[in-house]
Length: 249
Ligand code: PGA
Image (cartoon, rainbow, N blue to C red; front, side, top):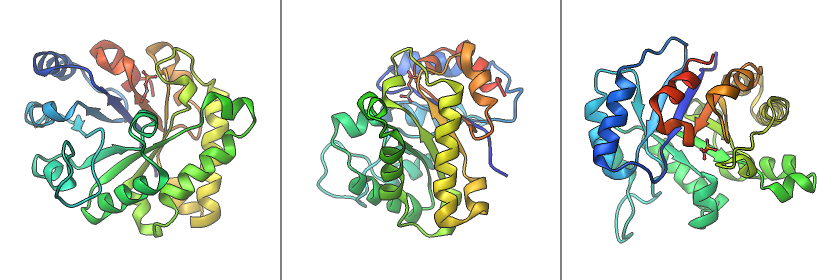
C-alpha cells in the first residue's frame, strides 16, 4: 500500500547556523503519525543535515540534480555527489525550476532516468498555472507533464517515484487548492497512471499535494482518499508548524 509522506522543501532559505537551529528543533519533536518525513535543505547544508539526522527517522533529500554523470556543467550537482553523502531522494521539476531555470519535460525525463539508473528516488513535481485553470486546461496540462516526464518508464520504475501535484497559483500565495480540487486532480492523476500501467501501480504511487499547506488546512487536505501527503514550502521553515502538518494524518 502507498505511503504517507510529508516533505519540507526549504528552497533557498537557511544558512548553516539557521539550518543547525531548525534541525535541532525538528529533532526535539515526535512523529505521531505514520508519515515518512523528509526535509530538503539547500545543497551547502545537505551534508550537515545528513550527519545531524543520522539517528532520526527524518530523511534528508535534495531540491534538484543534474542528469549528466559529470563534466563541464558549472554550478551543477550530480547524482553520485548526492549519493556519496547519503542523499538518495531528489525533488525534480518543481515549478520554480521549470519557470526560472527553463526545466522542460525533456530535461526532466532525463533527470528521472538518472535517478533510476543510480537507484535513487524522486519526488516529481508538476501542476498547472492559474491561466490554465481559468481556461479549463488544468487536466490536460497535468496529464502532459506527467506523461512527458514519466511515461517512458517501465512499470517497475514506479516504485521509485513519488508525485507532487502543486498548482502554481497556490505556491507561496496563501491560496490553497480546496481539498475537493486537490482530490479531483489526484484522482485524475491516479486514473491516468492506471490507464497505462494498471491499477496495482497506480494504487501504490504516493501523490502529494503542495501549495500553501499549513497546520490549519493539512488535516482536511490529507483526509482526501487520493492525497497521500504534502510537499511543504513556507510552513516547513518552522518546526512547530511542520510537525503539526506531519502529524495531521
Ligand atoms: P508553499 O510551497 O507551501 O510555500 O506554498 C510549496 C512548494 O513550493 O513546494
